Image (cartoon, rainbow, N blue to C red; front, side, top):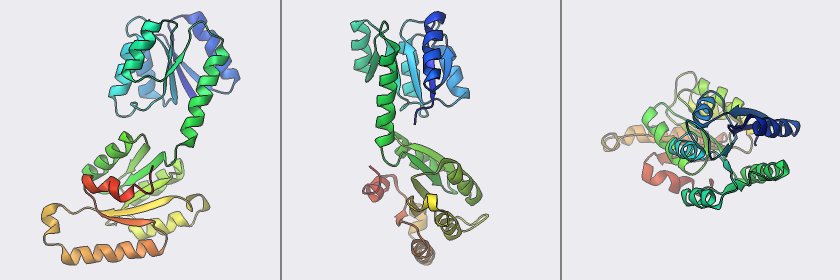
Length: 258
């Protein structure tokens, strides 16, 4: 859902006009006079779409686009380029830009473009995902894989934080470390989530992580893990996806996450 628009435009008159119209249509608008200011704003405030002019002082729209696409947390942020010049359109299109509006056009054109992007975002399934686990390296690997698939991913490292973030973001998909046993065991987290109607349709996956060395002598431990996974499935977990490896992770969840 697009609520906050960041407008990068060095012309104060144009920026004021666009900001006023967007605000009348219910959008929260942040304004930056150049690319550097835009990056500073994004570091402090979450935004849903960036609308940027091309020619600006200090950092232009080309460099701003490049910086946003380099960063993991902003690489999938929708960006609308304001330009009348075909040479700019061709250059941005070569970089992968899909959204343009003419600089001299009626603001309704920009409003329609934002509405189109918003509709596309809302159609995408399983955009909000919560990954929880005690092994930070594994959690970060899952996050990178899912972000690369254009999902919005939050992480938690204990059961209490998992429940807190689940209530804040209402994720479509939740990944839980089967060996979590800090404030509550994994099965207790699953049971707690399934008590609330707004989590009834959420996919809850459990997983484990044992290193290759640990797996060679893990018969007893693995039986305990499988027993815990069965309990979680019985009380509402969607699936136990086994021991995490980067190679098998997407394969195990492919039918559930498009």
